Length: 215
Length: 215
Picture 1 (cartoon, rainbow over the protein chains, first blue to last red):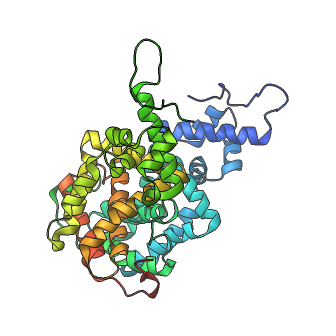
Picture 2: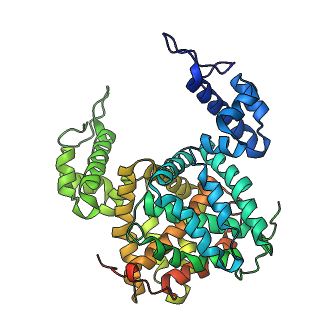
């Protein structure tokens, strides 16, 4: 499946010595494999470094935190998590709009927007990439939103809200379906706000099957 | 570019002559090109047949209606439109749940589900394929839902609802994020129903920018 050799160093025939970018790429290949094989929680810097044949300190030097390394494997801009987490610090009663504004705002910015578009396309192309995205969403976004909410079925609420804003971003920026594509940003946020608020803090039907929130 | 012969007749004996499946494929290639170049509304059986070097009657013989030909270019199961349109015939006040049940139900069926998954992946992979999907959604689903609704900003309402169910289907069946992935089907429909109903027939904020519903 991978094109790397056992020690993870790039040895392209003819010239091209490994160098810094070869090592960075080898780490990224190893990281993608480890995240896919062991999930976000199970993968370690040490294991990824061993797989890439480099020192763990080098992994940290190139990629910083585990979040940032994971984001890099998905081509996810590092601001994404930061801005979403900031949005969660506001009042609970305004979380719907704040969450929509923070996430959809990342897509409005040409630079993070292009990166998110590439990331979504990557994540939806293969089951392996979809698994990486799923694992990351669950470990780093859903759990964080759920912790902020308190109350009942918080993980279900967080996933419903996240799904809705991600779907809206894809409709606006990837499929570009009208009138969502050309709607003023503030209008879009105002339209989504109440629906997201219902998912996050509103009354949900009491469903026997929807209960096990900490499987 | 095309491999079809002029009369489109299957002449299978021995060797690899063009044959029926070669002609069918050539029509599909021509259709995809024409839909991409001229949009769903602009593409014609006649133009597609000319591009494929076959008689228009043969296009109709293999693919039936223009909807069905378009669906085939996206690998979309032909039941999709039918079942969605059926769902729209119920009472307006229950449209949210009916729409969720009809669309998400197509993903629960292993056969149509697999086809829809392939279709979504195709449509999200390139801008050209995304354009095909957008055009089809606008011409054949959004307009139909909007016509059923009456009232204000019907196209916007239809697109918001469609975006939400499509996003949910991708979360459940492609990304498979929990707990959406393993939620009982009826529970999922009950959770989404009220939010879809708000988009379709509920109060939406009065937004100056969201008004031009027939651009």
